Amino acid sequence: MVVLTASVIHSAGLGVLYLAVFGTGAIAGMASLSMLMALPSQYLTSRTARTMRFLSLVVGLLTTALGLRILLANAGQLL
Image 1 (cartoon, rainbow, N blue to C red):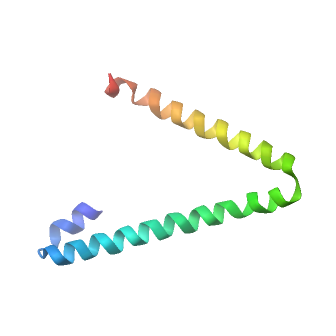
Image 2 (cartoon, helix red, strand yellow):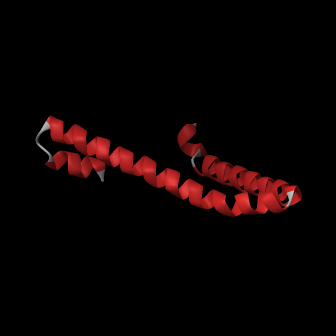
């Protein structure tokens, strides 16, 4: 999306401005989504420490499995 838009903009100043606005929006969007996703765990943490340990374990296992899946899917390109 950035490359497509940058190819249309002929001014270097406007291109830098576009990248700055795009980058700021992307960071703000990711931060907002992270905060929104943290709210349920914040609520559960205040209720029980056991639930938080369980959620941490589940999230850790899922992210490790996802990372391994991506690694194995791209292993041919890495070698």
